Every structure is written in C-alpha cells, then in structure tokens.
Length: 136
Image (cartoon, rainbow, N blue to C red; front, side):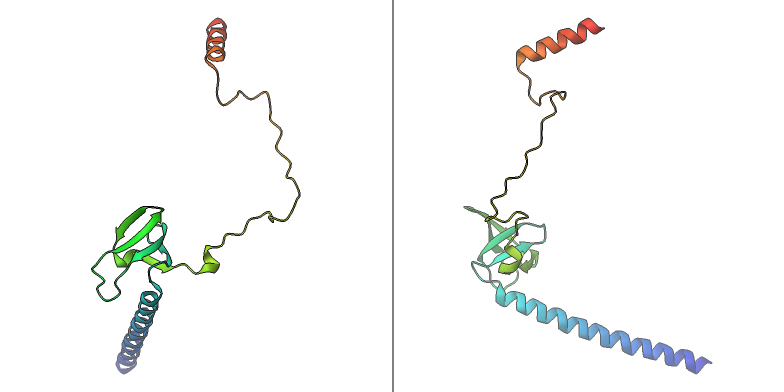
C-alpha cells in the first residue's frame, strides 16, 4: 500500500516537471514570435486595452520602454511586457452590420413628444418651474 502511494507521488512529480518544462518552452516561443512581429509600424494591443502603433521597440533590451503612438502625435512610453499582442490586419477590420453598398435606408425611430426634450430653453425652464410652484 505504501509503495502504491510513493509510486503515485513519483508519477505526479514527473508529470508536473514535464508539464512545467513544456509550458516554459511554449511561452518562450510565443515571446520570441511576438518580438519578431513587434517592429515599428506594427499595430499592437496593450494590456490596458489601448490600441496603438509601435514607434520604437528594442527586442534585445526589454528594460528599455517601447514607444507607442496611440493617437496622431500622441506617443507614450510603455514597458515591453505591456504589449499584449500584435494585431493582425484581420483583427483590425471591424465589419459593419450594414453593408456599405446596401442602399436600404434604415427607418428612423419616431420621437415620442410626450417625453420632455433633452435641452430646455431658459423660457421653458421658467415656465416649468412656475407650473411646478403653482401645483404645490
């Protein structure tokens, strides 16, 4: 019985070591692939959910911040590990639910006039306040 438990423990230990090494190799391969794709001009997704374009990136020295342009003329410094992934062109295309060549006009919703307008003029505000004061 004791040998069975030691055997089971040994099998689990070997499995854990094998699985850890396999995962480490896989992560290293993914990091190398990301480093080769992370070149100036590449579109990237940052950890915070911000999309940007690489301006400068040093794959040799990962302590050097990468420069990412998030808007025209707006460049930020980010840690190299803040780059989640390189956005492929197929990921960047967002398909519209309405085809651009479709000439069908969508029906505009009808406005319910019983609902107060979003913006009141000063005269309308005064009149409403006077009506509310008279009701009290």
